[in-house]
Length: 290
Image: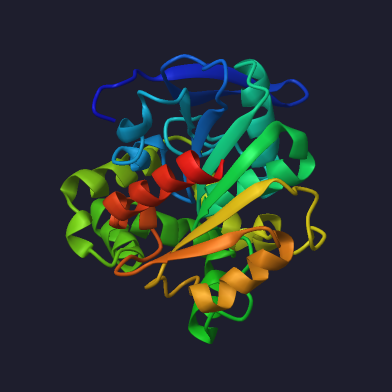
């Protein structure tokens, strides 16, 4: 992340008698009259995926970026991964940093995790900025995709397929459909996403959404949810996995207060795919809406 911060770690007691080493980075110091910003990556991602988004805001805000349990540089234990667990991690991390007011900027699964946390801790969140959040899927998954996820949910087949995809070629094939500007999927990005796949236990976290898809949905939250503060949806127009015209209305049932801003020529990884436009929108939200 442009060497603006070094890796830091904290030990999180995620279950009785079980701790995990969680990686994060911190930029600047808490500001007296401003909430901190917490950046939360999506499925398969890591805090470096924000490397084109954090630098423009480091002078004005205290910023934290975290690797979710099972991803990036955080430990990857054999545990039941789920949105509620990630929300617990966010809660424990903010307590560890003694942060009482935060704006969460979350992408995909990180956005869903941030929303889950905000639902359970509405007074702790000043604002939610959700970039192509997952968690609500409607009828967007085609029959072929459902068959594929059914296969990798099988323990033996899943581990074989994981081994086949846990390499630069497999990672490249997985990343390309999530970008409109596919030149962004360069060797640096591919290697960045490949490295954590080699870690001990990665198979458990990376296969969790296919093995227990209900653990990664927001369908069980009340509509509207408990969080009533400011919320913003920022979406890539070309996201074929989570098309905005189908998914945004579902999120606005959870968050009726949330407006939506659609960025053209951007797909699922909107914050990196169209980083300049995304940063401009985030700047507007931070300076005019929050």
